[in-house]
Image (cartoon, rainbow, N blue to C red; front, side, top):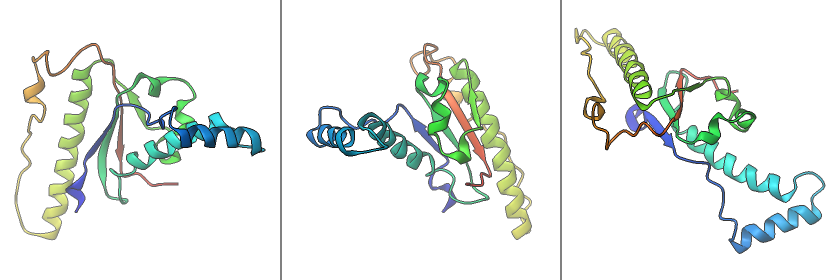
Length: 163
């Protein structure tokens, strides 16, 4: 059950299509009839709601773990953090290269593999020893697979308690 999702990769902010008639009408309605939430704010809120819902797919309970990778420069802008769910606002890490990102992910998952095996040992008499696996070996030295032109933001969450 816990192995269903160990990472989620977000490649942008899912804004609704601006030219969609329903979206246009809703924004106009908000601008003309709402005292608080104007059309632009409503439009932005829809995108961030969908994004935060996707982020929550990785961490399902207190003992769960997973990586959340945000691949869009907009996530590194000031003020963007306020749009993220409260449980992840202070956990963002920015990496300058894909290789740094991959190395961090490998270390993260290796450390959790050891924790999972330790939990299994408690529940059984297995003496299984974790093996260090290079999850990203196939990406190293392959410029067509990993481009240095991207500077992804990455968030790694561990044992998150939602607020």
